[in-house]
Structures are given as C-alpha cells and as structure tokens.
Length: 315
Ligand code: AKB
Image (cartoon, rainbow, N blue to C red; front, side):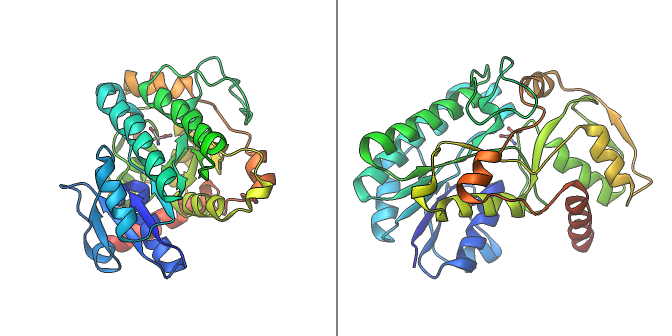
C-alpha cells in the first residue's frame, strides 16, 4: 500500500503517471493541481485530487498530512523554452518549489521523485554518449534549476536521509497531454501533423540529434527507480536515461514509412535551436541499467506505430 501525492498531476507526465500509479497501488494516489489546471475525466473520477501549488509549502504539508502520503512525485516545472522567457518564474517553481517539497518530505518522512533533464548539460559537456558523471554547466534557466535541483536533492539525502531519486529525462513523446514549451516538442507535434494530414514546419534544424523517449517508458523509469532497492543505488540525483536519439530527418523518414504523404519544411526557431545545440546528441545510460535495471521497451519505429495508431483512433 502506497500513498502518493503527484504535484503537477495534470501536466504532460502527471496525467499519465497518476493513472498508472492508481493502476498499480491501492492506497491514496492524490492528484495535486493548481487552479486553472483542474483534473478532468478519468483523472478526476479515479481518485482523490487536491489543490497543491508548489510555491505554497502549507498546501503541500496539508495534502501530505491529510492523505498520509509516503511518496511525492514533484512534476511542477516550466519546460526549457518557456523558462527562458520567464526565468524568474522558472526559478520560483523549480527551486523554491523543490525546497518546499523537500522540507515537507523531511518533516513527514516522504520519498521524493523530481525529474531532471538532459537540460543539465551544456556546450562544454561531451556530446556523444554523454557520461553519467560529467560537466554540468548549462546556460539556460531550465538547466540551472535542474542542476541545482539535483544538488539540493542529493544534499537532502546525505544531510537528512530524505529518500530523493531522479532521472534526467530526454524529450518525452506522448499522444495524451501536450508538453508545452519544451525544446523537444517538435517530436510530438510532427505526429499530430502526420495524423491530421497537415504539413509540418519543423523549428529544429536537420542534423540536430537529441535523446527521446516514449511516455510508457518514462512512466516505467519514474516508477522503476522509486521501487528500486536503495542498497543498489550508487547514484540518486539524477540518472541518465534514454531510449533513442534522432534528428528531424530521421523521425520524418520513419513517419513517412506509414504516412508517405507527410511533408516537412523547416522554420528554425533560434531560441529552441540554441538550446538544442547545447544538449547532448546521445546519453550513456549504463548506470541506470546496472543500478536499477532500466531497460526501455520502445525504439523509434515502435513508438511511431503506436503514436499513429493512438492518434488515428482519436480522429
Ligand atoms: C524540454 O525540451 O524542455 C524538455 C526536456 C528535454 O527536459 N522536454
């Protein structure tokens, strides 16, 4: 029996993670949301929900106390491109919010999962098969908050024994909730264009490789790490994880196997391109594989087939 609070339960990861946790555990799986982003449909009907603004420490503490929460999934964040346009808000949510979560976790003895990102890496990080332990000096506010978040989470583990764990997610691709404001969003948008029979205008230049992952694998990473035997964990905040690496031409060619009429043009967005250029081409995720058995199920082709099937079903 687990009692879990998901902060940011109506976002890209939270929408699916909350439902998946409700399928697995029979405790309270509580959907935390901010006013204006209320849960709807199955997410609303399948379990409890409560207003939790991550910048309000009392709201987090009240939810944890009320539902006897033992694990917090902290999914509140602005993605990379949005964070560059609102850096102050990105810090407030990413860092002040994380501090609030960690303090509540310390007080109530909760484990905490906070996603990190390939955004922790910067221009001077090795680009290919980027190692687990390497230079992390990003020049984006998103990256700065993610590196600081990794350090703060490790600090709370070492200093206070709070069971903090994290993965560095690559671009996440899903047919359910949209990402909104990320650098890797093009890899979601192209599937929507393909399924609707529309021309796709790509904001990222050909030849720009980034790591990516299909949402079912992202859920299994988040849950698998939180279920892992702590005695096996040499690292905690945060593990490199990846499932595939591609550039716009590769995903376009793969989708055209199933939608030959898809047309793609480029209109490169300088902000997103600069961020993408500073991120790795591909990650080495061998530590996650060795320490807790990370093993993704979807490659590019399997993801394409499932994305197109799901989007077509919806019409
Ligand atoms: C983004 O593009 O900002 C995110 C990420 C890779 O962290 N999808």
